[in-house]
Image 1 (cartoon, rainbow, N blue to C red):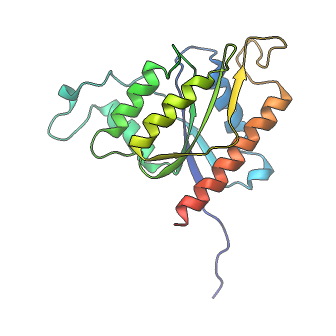
Image 2 (cartoon, rainbow, N blue to C red):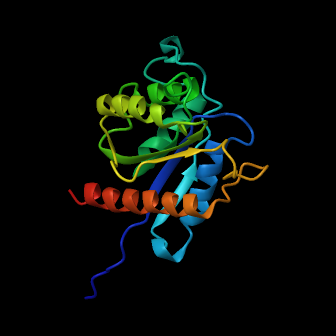
Image 3 (cartoon, one colour):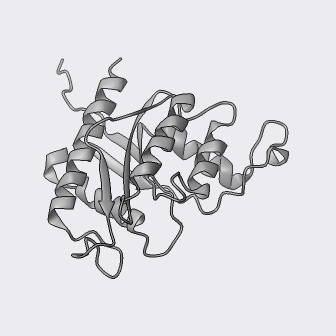
Length: 197
């Protein structure tokens, strides 16, 4: 009898904290999705963008008899089914954005569907490239039992010339693409380690 040596496909849920059209952070997710199709990942990484814009603001009055609003229930199912996560988190006032925090809160409502999975953070923005949002996101992840990769870190100054994004928000800077690829490889490796436990 032959033993299969195929590794399972890693399902990655990608969330963008910016709802803006042409968002640089969404551009990072789009680039990651394209990269995941490259041969270096051997068809084992499948990234799906999860839109958080339909989620209502967290209000436990919307939870009725242990059920959630349809948009919340669909979102929670996607989070539960994922093997790991990518957060593209712009920095608002030294922290994460309200839409991203809202999404994290909805998926943390009992039962918490985030738990014991790997995650990576990427960000793009002004001078700091969104980097300060990473620390708050990591703090939130401690309570939610999300295991973030530590290296490499990825935050990108999107406003200083030469522009790393084109006018449509697509990542065009090759060194930044290579850095993003290293994040994906690290996330893939860490996810496999956690799944093997």
